[in-house]
Length: 305
Image 1 (cartoon, rainbow, N blue to C red):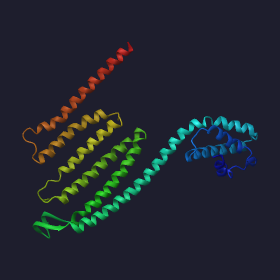
Image 2 (image 1 turned 30 degrees about the vertical axis):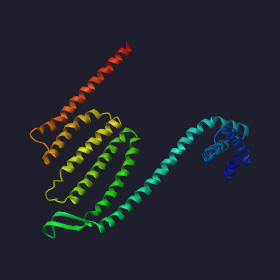
Image 3 (image 1 turned 90 degrees about the vertical axis):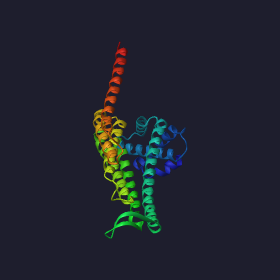
Image 4 (image 1 turned 180 degrees about the horizontal axis):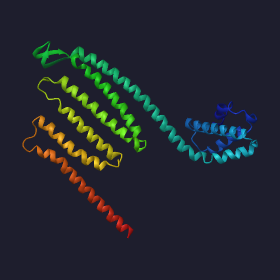
């Protein structure tokens, strides 16, 4: 390992003929002698030596020429090399894993798109679709090539890739300061809307009787899912106003749910119960919060006493 380090950096140091380079290498090797002999350890030692070299150049140019003092200074600035190795190695592995994941994701997205193209041609060439509606201004039952709807396969792949990319963006934004979290919430809603649009197009194109099938409730269902996703994000990231958000959203969600159920004739004279269910949930949630806070304050009071 010592030979490797020497050969990798021998062209880096030219001041004083590289006289104290040997001291740096010996210090690093002595401090790290108990570390595993692998490639990561080699990279760690090389980085420390590079940093020492740069620092030594800086100090030397400022006027310090004593080699022993310089060696002691580097030892003081780089203590506990063996202990710091494990932190460095963990971070290095994390970065390498992230790099592999990015590469794998790109390759996976490309493969998904090409597979969707292959499926598009296979389905288009070997399947048919029967529906009731207009074809060449003629109303009736028609059987057409599956190419009429097979483009949904490609669209689904593209939408999936977009959502996957947005998911990466949301994950990174969540690690940032809370001031950026509204951007993540907007991206989550965008993901849900993309899913809703795809579901609407699938229902429209794959329905055997599109003239009679009601499609518009899918849009309302998408809004419900968007609100529900926003509530989940608010609680997952412990947003400050998550309670207020929930209590505002629940009546809206219950009302929209009533509209959907009523559109398909799934509610009767008691449908109004669906609407007020949102208010009931709000009341129950508020009571739970009050009970929890009361219990907390009682515990705090007993602890203070």
